[in-house]
Image (cartoon, rainbow, N blue to C red; front, side):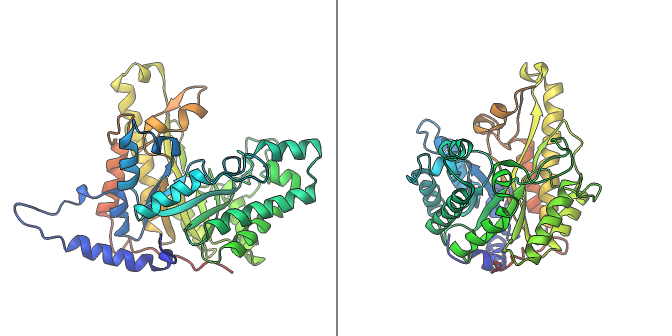
Length: 397
């Protein structure tokens, strides 16, 4: 990725539209937008359409289709696990950059942008860190310095190569947690207090003045009661508003978009309203980890089409709702699916009581599902005056 590519995204979109529209159409060779990739169609709007990448699948010589689609179908990539702390520094003081470097190089070769995921999260931390805090061998003061060093080291290594960083991930509780009143949760809040969030953004900005810095979370696709005690979207809104008022360089809010067909999900206007409200803070927005899982009942597992088809249709509708909302709001800069094939999806390994799956836009045999085609049609048929090229903020100093 070229430095400052995010600044010229509008120009890229205009140029791409011109190029697409300039394809000579004849009776024998008409222009067919359905033959374009999701990434190419997204560029018409200045929108990056990306995927999380499983490095093991990418390197599997027996599964070349995964690499081919990851390279050709998307305009941005995110490391599914390779940039998390436990992967980068499994032994204290010894970094293993191989997988993360490989992804960045893969993106460079394929002219893709990179979303960095993730600098600070309470999960997938190295054992030496969590056990050291638990047994008292790592003090709170030392822990803060270790966090500063980690952020600085990682962001500095990829300076100029990462378009968006998920700086802090999932810092806010859910209404079903204990206590039910929303609060800052997890390892970092428990050990450093909520001030670690502002610190993390400031350290990341110092290491890379040009990357866009995001707060990332789930269940913030729409607003509910408007009460920060039980409305997670409102809590995140108030948090980011407060951080920016303190001069903290938060450039964007990432809504993960992990949905399920068994739930009462949102309509396009609800999600659009949420994106616009976040945008009113002066930040960019993005959908960062989109998938739509379904319960794998015995009938589904037996191949009962009467059970499977409604789930595929509901999945497609949910993917499409998020895409249409993103297209409608010019601050929404990217739409990333969290894995693109059921063959390599995190969902079955995580949601197993009851079993869940069918969460991505390609099936296990790399055949595109209805959801893939709905996303493609959203990108093809959207245009002025309601869908315009993206507007990216300048990174906040």
